[in-house]
Image (cartoon, rainbow, N blue to C red; front, side, top):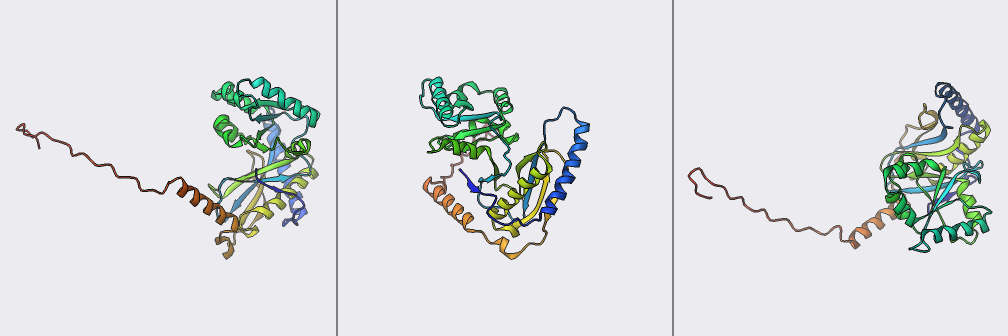
Length: 299
């Protein structure tokens, strides 16, 4: 489900003046790109984070509340759900549409797991699906199953479904929280990651507000603390990167794993022992090849 971070959790370690200066510089870059490419979509504005040390915890997800949401009720939202009826996808779809209409006042697009498996098998179908919606949400009861059914195009487009609790006592609050949040995913496979915090059609002030909230969340939740942050940049998906913060000094404390990493390592070791992944596999016996000499005798 991910760690939820509120933008008011700590004081921003970067000044507002620094953020506004970087935003103005990025908007000028994007304005020049817009003149060169008239057909481009509204660029996303991201914070790019690099750390001195790579986190030992894999697939860490941090939900960040933004003062100016990336998505609204007018956004195209798709929810992938658990099957309530394993034989009839339409019944599942009707069930969740009624639930959303009653709780939220409207229903996003509903795709039951059965329909996802049956109707979106091909690469082209998955590509078209990922391009059809602004945001994808996944029922937390089946979220672990979705990567194998959504494919690489969702990953490349950074449209992997957010987890949502469809059994929440207040579904409207749960749903609106997802619309007003962004997700920072730290895979643990490298020291660089990125999180979207705004779009280029936001005002400069709104972009600065969201960047400030994002930096607060990064400072609060980054593995091994703020001193592990080597640099922060803001950029669109394909623009120049504008620096916000650069720290080339490596302090001693960034070499010490934090409690979250230690817990992850211990759980991983327990799972591997439980699944007998450490057992010694018997070596295959090599069969000696029989050769035939020139005189016809076998050896």
